[in-house]
Length: 356
Ligand code: IPM
Ligand code: MG
Image (cartoon, rainbow, N blue to C red; front, top):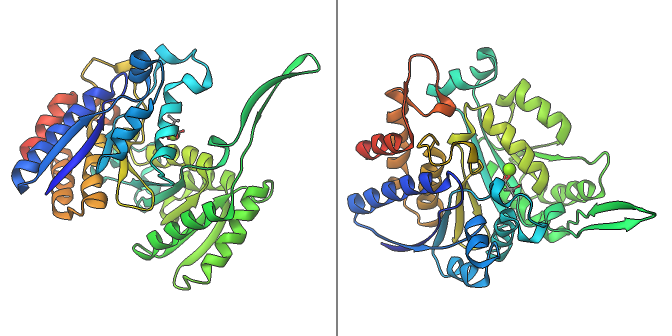
């Protein structure tokens, strides 16, 4: 197959992980007789430096012309003082909205080899961690009005959190469909004791529930969910939640699996074109030091093959290679534990390539 992949190398230590993911994709292309064409796309800090804009329309157009987009991570201290619309993160939000990617899928899966790296007690980890956070990605407070004004001699800031029924319904349906393909448990996470948006979420979810009688459906307040994720993560199969709650919960969910440096994500809309990115940030503190963990980005590339290109065997091959390397005890600094071998980003990439 021939696939055109948009590549956003990202900021700080991100280009280092994207380079490893591309080496993996090239090896897969050679092994399975595919052609992957790459189009370089600037977004985030790199685009601000070049064009003064975190996502110029021409760069978004390149994403829309691709079969899918692979991204590292954007942002860093260099751009921190910038006003809201000129921040690297704004480029990411405009990209998600511009590509219509309302559904963000973030798996929290424990790699047994990394059990020691989990901050949770062994007795909790032993029960297993295998759930998915389905995060709504183009609505809520991220996309409502943001303003700061002067009222009665002081500054007042406002961020609005809107949700409409159709936005909730389409992501709710993905929650139910995802659960149907797994252990058939879905938990809607919200703050319905306080927020109108959460109460509307529940109303819409109840309507959908009638269409999925096989799914064991539950609801949980987000504060309780944060607590339950560290108390007994084995209770979760699929969590569906709004944009900001999903942002917060997914960082927590990733960390209990051992390292945030291991967790990939997919963002999809109505078609097969997606955006694939690690859930971690651009790790500015270790940029240029060959220390960053490339695995989340490599696994994001595997997810792209699986979900957008229907290449399950190729995705399995990458995941098996990662598994083999972990079995051999190779670890980057973020997931290092006693008795393992510390390697850098490139050496980790080399080891994974050798297994493909
Ligand atoms: C994420 C990140 C982004 C988000 C930031 C960089 C805007 O934290 O993908 O989780 O909040 O969505
Ligand atoms: Mg986040």
